[in-house]
Length: 539
Image (cartoon, rainbow, N blue to C red; front, side, top):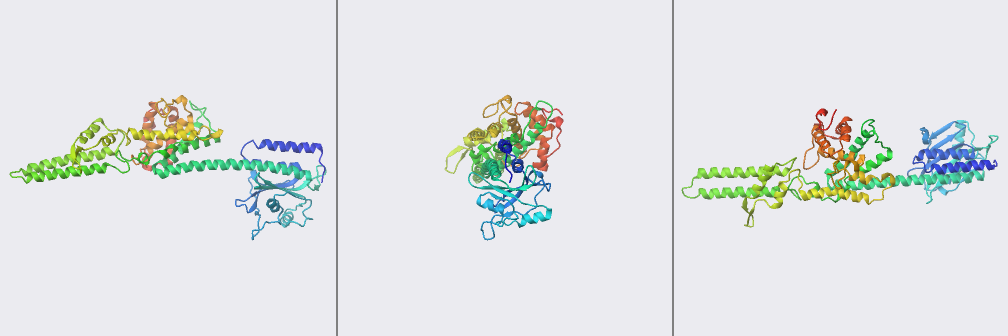
């Protein structure tokens, strides 16, 4: 056992200080653990060392890193070379603690073990070490084994050092008590690092689980929204990466690191979380008259009543003396043909679409004014005010009140996300997620932001959200559009101030739309795209 000089102690304190500083250098725990073992070797002038980590079931110790200078051995950790050694069991077949292995003993009892010569010790089973010595022509002698435990007494690993060397002669000597105390201090620091890393990982996993929980709730509520919540973040990241890789033009300065990517990905996953509060009958409204059920069937029944009444009237007239049965039959056929035409028209109007003409809206109102007698014997208009209001919706299937309810989801999204205590590296999630319905000209919602007031990420997500909605083929109220149709609409949006024209240029130029389409769209939607014909885009 060698004596330590003041210079040796100062050197060790410097190493401990370096390790303390390294604790805050990042989250690469693999590199950090490599450094812990190498520092431990350097501190004690050991020839070799091993770092064990508990198995996932905490029933054994697994070899994580192994170093030996004499044998020129470096396995596990950052070496990229796997350690082909069986784990050390912490318990026997009866569930009793393993007391034969020095590493298992240190792990089970949270005690350091310092042995001067393993060949002279009779307390532990060193047959494995002796076999190793015989195989590699090595001579193990002194051994220092120190457990790494956290503040709650949980085992995080075991640090084991082999063959301390005299600094002057190189002779194998025992590890001193001072060696043991320094390594115990080092093991404590390593435990802090591991605990912090595990807490970070657990918090990130919890956050992802909560995000998935929200999306599961939305998906269960509306299967149509679930696909959208999955594809928008995917397309957002594809476009953001294309912008990141653009070396020239207005977006050349945009760059992302891994943290930026994670932040944007989470924002994409949460961009519609407010829809969890939106009524199902609004989210899934497939036709203009749908609420809990499609009320067009009630109108069909009224037409059947009118058709029946017309037929009864005609039969009564034909029963009259000197009735002109042929003329009555012609009149009945004409009246029923008109009724069926009106019924078919309302059925078509109920479907919704890109735009209902003023003439068709007026026709709905004319049909509504027809008087008929209901089951209660009361005469009334054929359509009530609510039915007229819904059937004359010009775009899509939602009336003004329902459109306000749908639009309110983004207000709820922002309120939900801004209520969370986001860490610094995720602080922009509410802004990214809450801006995908804003427009470059300030006419969007909910805040009426302009291009200059929005981040690049929010503008990217706006394009991803619209393109996914246009091409989505699972919506109950529309069919998925083809690539050429969708790009034509987006091009017009780029011209009229709806979306960012610079980002749209990259979206087309870097073929982001095509990469997404080949992966996620139905082949029938992937038609030929003449990029020269896309509005607002110059090849």
